[in-house]
Each structure stands twice: as C-alpha cells, then as structure tokens.
Amino acid sequence: MKRPTFPAPYKHEHAPVKNVNEVVNEQLTIGQRAADWIAAKVGSWEFIIGQSAILTFWALLNVTAWVRHWDPYPFILMNLVLSLQAAYTAPMIMMSQNRQAAYDRIEAHNDYEVNLKAEEEIKEVLENLAAQNIAIAELHAMLETLLARPEDKE
Image 1 (cartoon, rainbow, N blue to C red):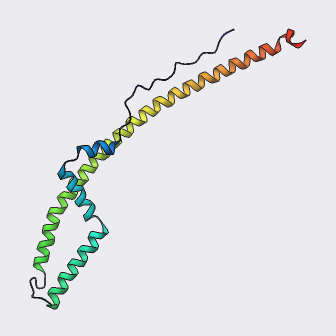
Image 2 (image 1 turned 90 degrees about the vertical axis):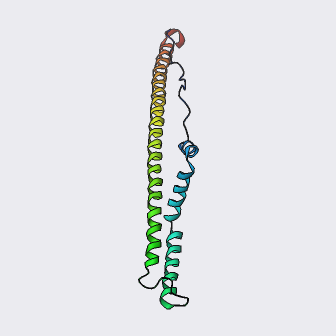
Image 3 (image 1 turned 60 degrees about the vertical axis):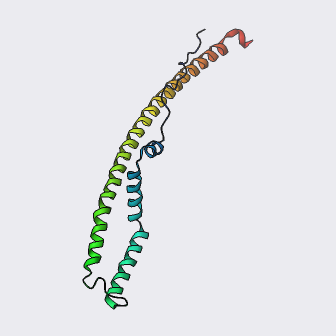
C-alpha cells in the first residue's frame, strides 16, 4: 500500500523584519531632528494661535500708543520679523519634508520585502495544504478499499 507523501517542512531562511522607525531614528542627525521639531511646531494650531496673539498684541500696542511706538503703522518692523521667520522656517520645513520622503521610500521598500516574504510563505502553506488534500483523498480511498473487502462483511 502506498503511503501519502508530504513536502519537506518550510525553513524560514530570511532576515527578520526591520522596524523602519528604529532604523531611521538611529540615523537622524541633530539638524534633521531640529528640522522635524520645527516643522511639527510651526505646523500646529498652538503656533498659529500663539503667533496670531503676538501679532495682534504688537499691532494693538503700536496703534493705541499704550507704550512708545516702536513700529508705527504700516508695521514695517513686524513685516521684517515675519519675513525673517519665513526665510528661516521654510527651508527647515522643506528639509523635514525631504527627510520624510526618504523615510517613506525606505518604508515602501521594507513593505515590498515583507510582501515578498509573505508571498513565499503563503505559497509554501498552499503547497502543504494541497499535499494534505491529496493525502486525505488517498487515505479515504484506502478506507473505502478496506471497507469493501468481502472478508470484513462476515
């Protein structure tokens, strides 16, 4: 009687999956961390509300003359300060976005590697299931053969 055959057990011969966050964070420089921090702060409601409050206070002090006018209307000094802020903030935000784009590429590549590993393992599982289906069918046929023997019907 023929015995059912099964494929050899699957061997996991791939490197472990990497945590992209840890890999990227280990490689960040002080400048990149600073750019990320500034981008996070400048892109928040707290910053917008705080800056709006400061600008409103600046304008009120200079319009109402509660204190000496250091920047009379049309607020040329305030425009200069805002221009300097924009001139330094915009490149830092762009640095952060460029680094984020590089991170996204690394993450996409890692996802691709994980998908390849998963595809390989799913293929092995399906082959093993197919072999089990064949073995079960063979065992079923053997049982029918055994049950059909005339000497067993006595």
